[in-house]
Length: 319
Image (cartoon, rainbow, N blue to C red):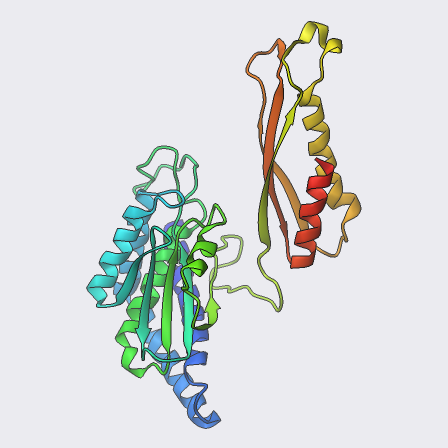
């Protein structure tokens, strides 16, 4: 039942995304003509999307990708599934982009260029739920909906390809690798994927929202994310029974972790959402030995560039 609900959510989000894109296709015309064409395109999209075959096709792709999750820059099988389906649709694409990424174009071939983007990579998580399409790769899972995002964008490609002769613009379909590592988008931009693009649309599935709800708001919607790594090196190991003779990097690292949380709770504007998370700590391996060093790292998130820079600087100062 949950699988059916999740995929109904997918199709509804597809409708929203591609209706939004269609609003850009007709801005060259006068208001009456633009309004009529937008309404016509919307109806065609609804008709094409609300077919049993479309839903069945998208579900099969999502499940295939889900069964074989791949981490950042390892998305070769995922990319091959995407390219296989684009080939069947007759959609022209470029590959590889940023190692495993795929970029396709549908429409007039002329401006305006509007981009639609989906991510492809999975997470290093063991899937514990036992179901027919459970991950077949040990220690890897699509736990952040990138399998569904890719299937959704292919669904959009199918719809747009069927009405390509009516489009007054070019839609750029971006299948991005390495989102979870925070580097895939940067690498695709470096390969000029967005050079001619005037607008870009993206979305993310959120199971917290009721079926059929599309959530958005003015201004920033998703936070920018940075990462940090630190090493506290005391120079030599020591016996814990005579710990007074040695420096303790574990204690120093623990104090740093607590102090990092104080940045958000005591120093930053409470009206500006910010998060600092320490998610990795590595020290010694013996219970009775004080290690010579500790490494730790994590992420930080903010909603605007000024706060991002300030938070990054403060993390460095605290550590």
